[in-house]
Image (cartoon, rainbow, N blue to C red; front, side, top):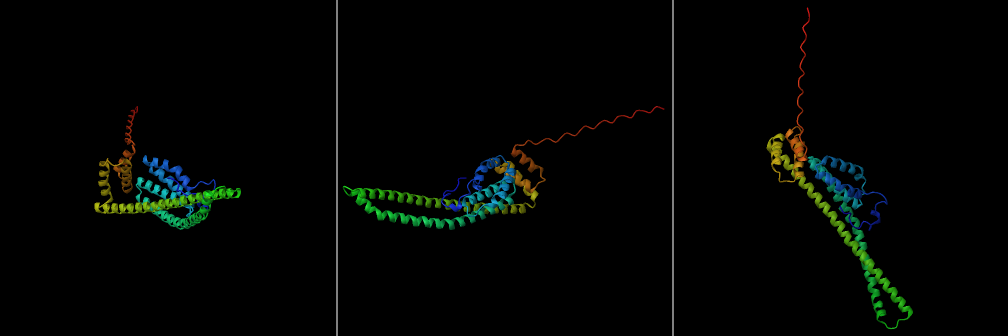
Amino acid sequence: MKRLPLATLLVALAPVLGAQTLTDRLKEVRGPWEAQLDRGDAPSVRKGVEALLGREGVAVNPSDYNDMHALVALQGLAARACVSEGSWEDAIAHLQKAKAAADENLASAEALLAKTRADHQAKLKEFRDAIARQEPRLKELDGAPGLNADQIKLRQQLKMFMEEQKAAIAHSEKALVDIDAILANLRLDKENSTKALTDWQAFLAREKAEVTEAGSVDRYVADKLLQVKADDSRPQTERLAYARRLEKLAPGNPETARLVNALLGNEEQPAPLPRPLKKKKKASAKKA
């Protein structure tokens, strides 16, 4: 995840020097965790993400849009781990938190950056007006023949002034572009988290309806199990997530456990052979 632009525009939002922000932590752990999810190790990822959220997520400053952006991403990663683990209700809980954080972050940033935007727009008008006032004088000096020492000095000062104003204009124009980029990213966070939550709530409702239609959880699991086994055109991670979901719904079903192990590439261990019965020694005949 790229850090959002304009990180130094507002001093109030800058992290404490030397402190590791949630954004920094996410950059460190996201790649390894996503690789673990691709290998099917969802339980470890979920444990790690939830531990990080419990440790550092609760301390995020709501006015720090970079860390709030990271918080949304972490909640989304936790939801993905829960889906892969088969814990879809828990995934929805994380998606609800992601949406709440995204909504809050956008509202806070819009209010804060509106003032910053207005300040830059006012500065742009000030800089452009200053250039407009001095430009005729500079053109006059540039066109005049035989300038004396004072006029040469004044012309040089005006040129330096113009360069400073143009640099200030470029800075404010760049800041306005960065503000637009920040708000676009935060709006995307809100849109994506809202859509993911809505989609998964609908998906879970559909599952419940299918269980009811099947007549029992066991019958539903048996039917779905056949579909997951047969549908080998889907990505293995998707099939594994579904197999784990069926295992959660019917934890005592040996077929679901067997499918999960097969998708993970684990060889099913053969049942141990029964020990041979020991032969009883014949009792020796007693002498009369």
